[in-house]
Image (cartoon, rainbow, N blue to C red; front, side, top):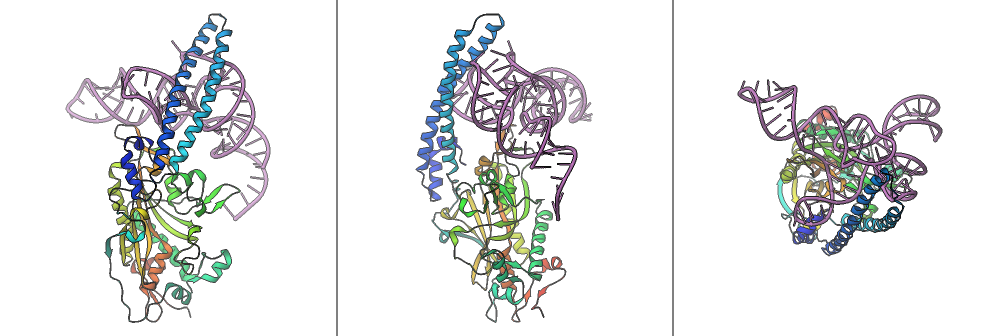
Amino acid sequence: MLDIRRIRDDLDEVRAGLALKGADPAVLDRVLELDKARRARLTEMEGLKGRRNAVSKDIGQLKRSGEDTTEVQASMRALGEEIAAMEVEGRANEEALHEALLAIPNTAHTSTPAGSDASSNVLVREHGDIPTFDFKPKGHVALAEDLALVDFARGAKLSGAGFVLYTGTGARLQRALIQYMLDVHVTHHGYREVWPPSVVNRESMTGTGQLPKMAEDMYHVPSDDLYLIPTAEVPVTNIYRDEVIDEPLPLKLTAYTPCFRREAGAAGKDTRGLIRMHQFDKVEMVKFVDPATSYDELETLLADAEDILQRLELPYRVLQLCGGDLSFAAAKCYDIELWAPGQNDWLEVSSCSNFEDFQARRANIRHRADNGKPQHLHTINGSGVALPRLVVAILENGQRADGSIELPEAIVPYMGGLSRIERPS
RNA sequence: GGAGGGAUGGCUGAGCGGUUGAAAGCACCGGUCUUGAAAACCGGCGACGGGAGACCGUCCGGGGGUUCGAAUCCCUCUCCCUCCGCCA
């Protein structure tokens, strides 16, 4: 949520930030109008309330000294009704303004490249060598089926398209990667591990910005009005909703969760394989940081995500998203993409974003500023990293001519010593 | 699912119709003392909104009601605790 004061005081800057993102800055005019009306009525009502408070106090004194107050009380009753009517109106104004503000996306950081879609994203760096093969590299679907790592057909039988059943070594690989990534973040990057619920309430979904705008992308349980989380970002960020964090910043949390996405707008896209699924697993990093350092903290969070891929010796590249490709809540975002030889393409495995105080305002997460006053902090998060596409890259990059997979050295201990996945006999 | 009890500032916790926006303690900030720190003592210290400011208003889990006036009384919802039942 944008700060209404910022809209009042720095309208041009906010307008530019929204325009960069491809949002229509005209919504700001409506917000300012609502705000103006709201404040005018508020001042008027406060005057009346001040009078009521003063007279009511007098009535108490008069009664104590035994005087008759019937007449004053009658006139106050009329004033009370007037105030009640104004309160109803005031609440409606307040709500309209709040709704309008919730619907406005975050502004893009000034470093954001212009552009309306992914084609304008800017390459920041590439890391690692793209492997060459003296045979035609297979895609991960064929590899996973040949090696009995994933049962796509039975996954679909259980739950439909977009759900898979990992089997045997494939299932173990999921568990190993989850544990490996959590270990690296905790022991090498200084994150605190948490294990949150996979289902959250409406307030949590609103706090991080998924609601109200993206409702149709979420799985919803109507009987309890609960949502399946699309990312650990939602429960982890909301841990501190409506709180003043007293711990020193930055506060760094990491979590593994399953993620659920209806992918409503992507029907029919990437339906085969592990590229785009309704349920997938992900290790996430979330940081609560001082506003003064949030852009530095974004760089180190990005480095933490890259470190995972470097340790796994996988080729990747980092892109900075252009305005049009930025998500609703993000001010700045880097994507990390892994090279997948079987797809002959780059696959996004991580988005690292600075939300500035956008989420902190919605979720009312604060810390004590240097002057001792509570202040909205900045939130940052990033995947560290998403499992299915990581598995795709491990399979497709590690494949050998005989159809076996050479596993990255770093996860061998997590695989019980297994360094190569062979065709089952 | 049944029966009771509870929700007050960053935390603990008094108050149960009228100088209570809220006692007290903790935490925090400033000062005295000290070589320094601790202790002790003195002072300050809730949040949000409006206003250039003096200042004004709102907020005692959420919503509604009674009243001239509600943290305080009534209704309702949510969450927490205790006991019983059920249960991976």
